Amino acid sequence: MAPAPLPLPTRWVVGLLGVKLLCALGYAYLYFHLRPATSDVWGYYDQSRQLAGMIHTPADFFNYALPTHGSWSFWMHYNAWNNLKENVYVLLLLVMNLLTGGNVYADTVLFAVLTFTGWLRLMRLFRALYPGRAHVWYALPFLLPTFLFCYSGLHSDGLIFALLGWFAWDAYRLFVSAAPHSDGDAAPRRPPVWRFVLICLLFACFKAFFLALLLLLVLAWRLRRPYGWLFLTVAGALLLAVTVPEQVSRQQEYLALHELRPESATTAQPLTAGSYLSHLPGAVWTGLFRPAPWEGRKYLVSALEVWLLWLLLVYGFTRRVRRSFFEASWAWLTVMFCLLIGYTIPVMGAVIRYRALLFPLVLGLCLLPLVRPRKAL
Image (cartoon, rainbow, N blue to C red; front, side, top):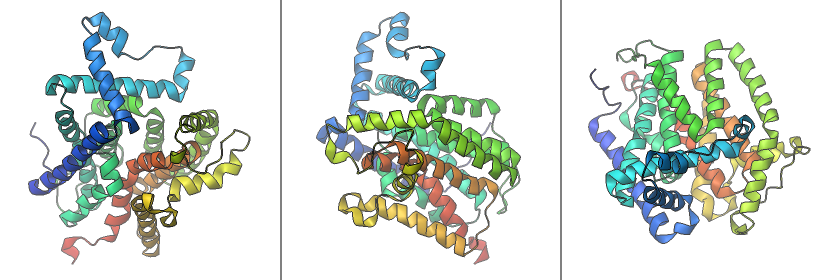
């Protein structure tokens, strides 16, 4: 089977990859040379080197490299899946070290190229949804500074975004549309189902709760509007209610962690199950709007990004942009994801990093419908 054509001309793809590599190498220099104690990336990398020294037989690999197996109740908690993510990521670093001789910059380049595949898939999705735009508009969503910094370097979050790109593009072709593009491109080929299942399994390893949100989207796409919106409304409320104990537990862990580093904490109050609803306005403000432009220079870039996205969304409403249920339903995912962040993460730096996962997708869905196709000019 011939490889799929690139979503943009080769020079554009190479340019985007070059930007990603520059950011990734800068990230590596910052966290491996200047500030290794402030990032968990160094800890994972060090674990992979220690693991290489301990594994001599297949039995060693099973004992040291695989996550601890617990009871079924153990896997109902966030920490179980978080530990699995860390184990799988350390194993990936271990394999990369075998290929690169353990050189952190070679690892970074390899990792950046690997995760760039997710960027390419989302660009294909943008072209399928909004054909005929100039090349720059398809590339622009990936150039947000916060996203570039947080999702380019040697961090497991980059893998999560890559999986999101693969998931979104394959889900679109499997469950939403197989029609030809309006700009004359061939109909998108249906991907193999086994690959979509594999993507879901990998998502379960790296961010299981995010996979739950994505699978709810898939079910809603099958129902279509208006039943899809009804399903998402009920499912979202149930999901928030059922996971209250985990949200409370997760926030308490963050608060305990940052008691040693109070400069990183925000002014959020500790969350309890009894006061859950009273915390809703604060969760909405933190997850969807903070940092605000007036909160200081430290977070100014992130603040401008967040409020720019809101301005684009409001402008789209004033222009009465028509969006398919597939496009609009990603807003539900964004709101749910940001609400969970607002409820559970009282550290502004972590809020910014986690939320940046959806920024390219949100910017593309807000911006590209407002841009007129070239052939219409």
